Length: 375
Image (tube, rainbow, N blue to C red; front, side):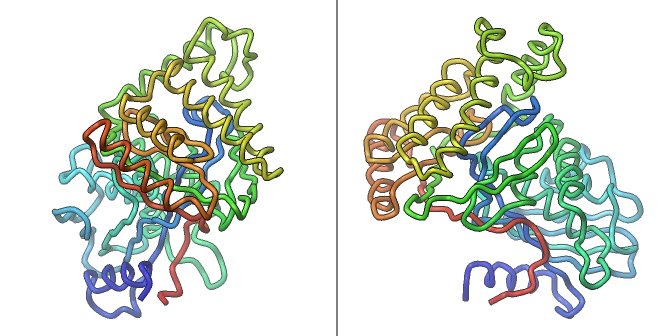
């Protein structure tokens, strides 16, 4: 039985009752190749939807209200009548359920079960995957042949759910990646207009995610502070966002300098992918990591050490992925070398830091939607 089939079966078993009356939806996490802290400034990003996803099994009932269970963490979330204010819900994962339910439910009563293979606190968009899956699950079942929601609407609502549940003013990259994922392709996102252009990944290049062993929680990080700094820089320049700034205009502002230079690197990285130029791509990832470390100041000694270990082990390129402050590093390696590169890097990292990293290969996968094939 495949991992997806096993996860679906477990969710349906936990839901109980007649399987024919249940629906299952899926929303993947993502790894971002390059372009961090650019989405909320209307810039460019280059993420990949990965083969780790959040699943939600759901069924309508006659009893008003909602009951939700998770297969990953303890606790049950339930209420009758209208959803409660998300910030009042315990356990904390239930805040996402309450925020999603505020946007609608498929019937007077709902039962759902959540299961996710996206590691939490890793910088792989576990929260966005959860929010996207919940919005899909709680949308009214569509007539046959129609989609549950348009991609743009789904991503926008899922982002609103995450903001309501966490209080963190996240950008739209994670939700767009989860919704519009495409097998064997990265996604060039224009976060000003929320457009998505698939960029094929070279077949000889493998992607790995390596967890530093340092968890990351955006709500307790300086994420909102960084965003406020970018918005203040745009106001000083008389611009609606840093998307319109030139590099010479922000030369003396490290936060803004990162955003403007990162947008340029994203477009260059997409061109390098199209050309199959792995060496150029590696140099761009290195420049991005340096900018995130020195200008935007969201790297950590552990993330820096892990990037160095990966490059020394033979990775084509490596950088932190996501918001930073902990979590994962993304690594690119030639397919035939990837397993050995990841193994050597993990060993070197532990020897230097005393932390045990977790490495796993990831593949680009399709975006969120109903699960119909459990095989």
